[in-house]
Image 1 (cartoon, one colour):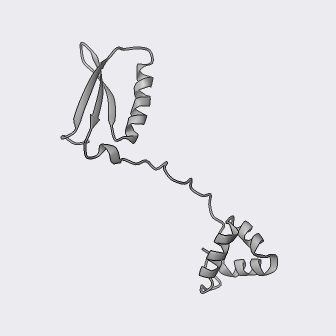
Image 2 (cartoon, rainbow, N blue to C red):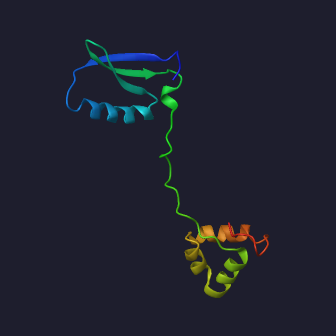
Image 3 (cartoon, rainbow, N blue to C red):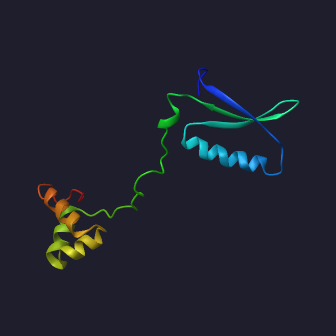
Length: 120
């Protein structure tokens, strides 16, 4: 956050769950681009929320979107062609852990490659 950030303070009462509640609020506020913390002075405790108008709405986290696939099976083009020829396209697609339509699309894309190149 920068010097042009804005800050909102709320006075809070100390309690046994205050630290845990503030930690949860920090996690939730981070997604929205807010910085949350406790500010303790001699006379009171404040919940401090800092934000920047330009930045607040647009922060993203890495947990969005499709889940990442597991490690892909690495076979050469020669091995895949041989597997398709001997066992069939369904077995080859299952070995590569991909749908049959995806297998055919990749199979036609990989036809011009050398035999020792990886099937992608």
